[in-house]
Length: 312
Image (cartoon, rainbow, N blue to C red; front, side, top):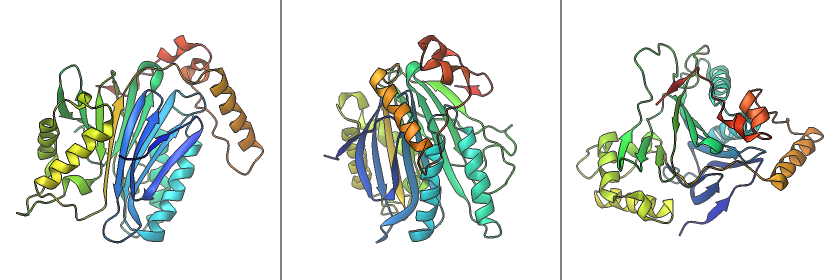
């Protein structure tokens, strides 16, 4: 059984080392598997979770960068700071734009780039906003229709939008917005999973991945997401699939809608913010939006939804 971590408000957790853990988050449970390729202790797959000061905003970042060892560790440290700076923001686009700018400047002339998925779960209304920067599309299980579906995160009319990080400095980033119901699942992964090959040299691919997930059955029969995830990984191995790259798999399950932290939790978040104000860390100021600034005090404002990105 993988160890379980309960994340508190104002916390960032993750990295690029070998990981097999379960997480408890506001309105959500998660299972995280990270396997650096070969004998390296730190791979190029970087994952982070964060929880805001009021317990309403949970963020997931999964990035596949080029390189291992100290080079990847340096990018992982930068991403940790970025996650912390924006942990009180609902929208993920500023994070993607900042990552793109920094990676472009850092990798200029080297021909390197990264792909990534940045997701925000806004617990009061069960809203998931996803920004995909050239990354394999996640797969979602809807409890209502009892099926796994590949999320269509690419559009032919996007032009230079949502390119891999570091390719084009002026690339813009937009997202897809959907509502999760309790019992819905989302599987996020790096290309090390779908590029795994079996004994005959055949690549797994997204469609075979979806079929194996379907064969596992109803994910809600398990009390823990990790039970489904471990069953899924055992079936992959039984089919002879082996990854020849860094491998990261994250399974999310929506459990409930929550209003956010109670008075004690909010006070703790404010206190940590004040401590950081007088310390050496940058203050993670909240996003200047109606639902972010007022929603923590007056819950009806949590339902104020911007309409400048697509809804699925």
